[in-house]
Amino acid sequence: MTSKTDSSETESCKRSIISEQFSQIKKEGRIALMPFLMAGDPDLTTTAEILLCLQENGADIIELGIPYSDPLADGPVIQAAAARALKSGTTPKRVLEMLSGLRGKISIPIIVFTYSNPLLNWGMERFCYEVSEAGGAGIVVPDLPLEEAELLSPLASARGLDLVLLVAPTTPKERMERIAQSSKGFTYLVSVTGVTGERLVIQDRVKDLVKQLKESCSSPVAVGFGISGPEQVHQVRRWGADGAIVGSALVKRIANAEDGSAVNEAGLFCKKLRQAVS
Image (cartoon, rainbow, N blue to C red; front, side, top):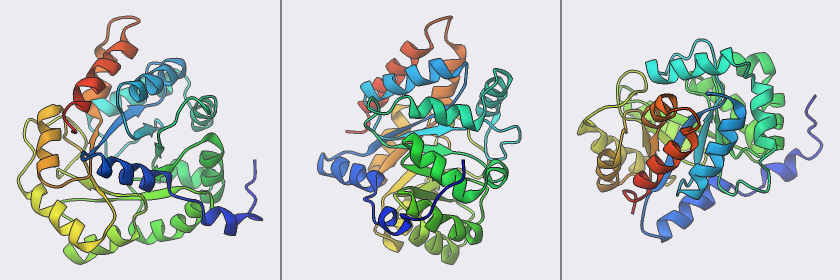
């Protein structure tokens, strides 16, 4: 389906669902709980059930990964989940069809996580159109350089989507400020140098990075990569972060769940994490 641009001006003025969610959460005196889920692992029917279960158990925003064969930013847990999802026949189109089927049931923002190659193969404008039509609220593309993100961002905004950009500990200060000012919805702060995965300790330098980002821009800052449980959630909350993104720890529990228990395991873990954000 080819996207149309006749209503771009109207669409570009649409409210940011993600920004509104962060504003509400701030009023409640807590930070956002933001689980990451790999679509299609073990299958898309289960993914849909887990999305609803995470919402029911306190997730504020969910990051939904589209499986890709060469996920450069992901560690072994999420790489394995992507491989299983691809093996089960998961495609970007099927992921968005599944998400579209949850319209009216999902009331929290869903951010679609993908990589540059699938995005470019699909076409930036068409991809934004399809994600918006499916009910997505934002997009994360971890391997998209800032210069190309500046091309994608207006296309996303025209469809009412926030393009969320990532900042790493190795990002130079001046570039970090540019990224923070360009990111929509919130800025995604990568807490480690390397790929996703559970960590026992989050390095203290993350505290300074959170402060630096919040001084650079008024948009919220969410910390991800390495948050494995309530202790790390508490830690980033004390450091002033506005959100905690939990990926590998949740994906691992889903993968290790006994037959038929993946949805319940995901819900129980989310409920435990929710207690840590307040």
